[in-house]
Amino acid sequence: MTIVENKQQEKLAPVGLYARADAPWRLSVAPMIDVTDRHCRFFHRLLAPKALLYTEMVTTGALIHGDIARHLRFNEEEHPLALQLGGSDPRELAHCARLGQEWGYDEINLNCGCPSERVQKGAFGACLMAEPQLVADCIKAMQDAVNLPVTVKHRLGLDYDTSYGFVRDFVGKIYDAGCRVFVSHARNAVLKGLSPKDNREIPPLRYDVVAKLRQDFPDALFVLNGGLKEVQQMYLMANEFDGVMIGRAAWHDPYLLREASQLLWPDVAVPSNETIVEIMMAYIAKERLTGVPMRLTVRAMLGLVNGQKGSRLWRRTLSDHRLLAANDPALLMQAFAQLVNSQTVV
Image (tube, rainbow, N blue to C red; front, side, top):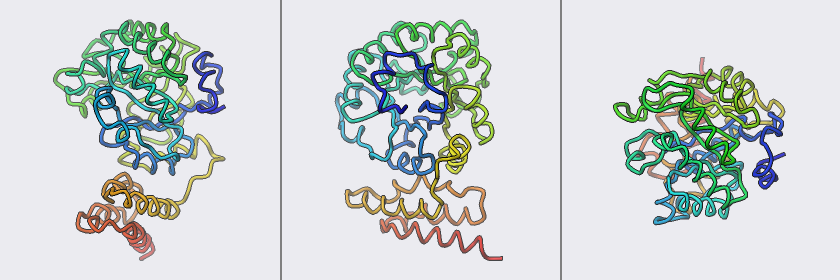
């Protein structure tokens, strides 16, 4: 049972009926601004063939007033792929959800977790957790507009309010509107005084709260996000909850994504590093024809071999502005050859 084949059933049936191993949320990569663009997602797909990928957050204003194609274009290889929207107006979100469906996305996700000042000024992101009825109205409007799963990514609380009742009531209001998939970043969002980076590290992790939500809403799915940096931990949490969402670990150490994928789907083959390099060379060459500079298509690969002998040389070669300026895909094979050579020299 796949996310694409069961759009209408997912909208109408309790998602708890899915076998956990078949649920597309079992392993996903978080939406990260200025990180998970289509080039990064193409690369991540090679590492995790069955993982659910998310776009960067796209605001409703960007789609209504901006270049739709620039924001929504993706590679077919990226499926299953979710579009994350940022906004707080039900009609605008419904319109943008329809655009997402028309462009071929597999899921629409509403951001209720981003704590940045820019997002707060737009009255969406984490500050929406203070307005659960508005979020419920947004979810209902999007569900009425599309035949795709409409999901929510949220925090556990705002500022220093750690009461369980706050997040339980928030989830309950959205659950009553029909949402059945909750991606729970297991920290509070501190709206004043902490940067987005600090908000990913300083508020304490509370996995037990997500576990209680899962217990209190048994026919909903709860995907755990936050603090997942070790492969074994990812595997254990993916089985304890309904899935895990990996954030910065997938960016800084993308090989962790491959290892997690292999643990969760041991029968699904993952390409070797050499094959990945060959596929990415072809991708870079294709993108170069449309004017995309190589520095954008390789940046997600810098951490592929972190921790291995020669990884520093690999990163240095693929981040050298002078070398990248030539836009020659062969640079990738050159960097890989240097890596292999450094590992074979005694």
